[in-house]
Image 1 (cartoon, rainbow, N blue to C red):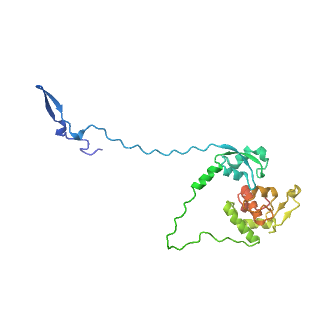
Image 2 (cartoon, rainbow, N blue to C red):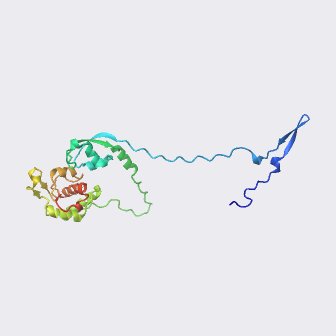
Length: 259
């Protein structure tokens, strides 16, 4: 309910309702006298609200031809070019070229990639998102070391696993010390020169090799950049096998038998 007197008619200002007579040759013309406080100028309009930012339209897919290099996998290529539908769609688009096993793609193979982001766009995005350099330390402050000392590893199974884990951490490949060690002991008993010359892979001409018993095509497909191209190299063998296990099983930690 409205309060008393809230809607009462305002008292008339005598200045705004008075009249004066203007002489016009004997006849009097009555004119209203308007007070300046009741000028009829329109109220200024408030400034329009700031325009809302409109989301940018999704980048349309651009078809390009990609040549496979060592260390590539369909998952990595799909991620690199933001393929809609991921590696499964990339495999579907190239099944004739790849064959029945999407895990095995060989260097030199040409794939049709429906990319939604090019290499140039990814480089630009990476550069723009890089954190700003820290401000210079004030004069008189104690200088801090900016580069860690090079890490060294022992030339044995423990050192190989630890070096592989550090490389895997840089590349985003999952796996733990225990998971790697457990599978190495089952596959090769810790012998980096181990080779299986009797199973079906050996009969097919691709014997399993090294600490984690990887066949050459798998080693080539999942080779980790920066490591040796020798499948008997302990660190290269571990990282490639863990890369393969991550792609197929989610992590080497999930492997508890032949893989």
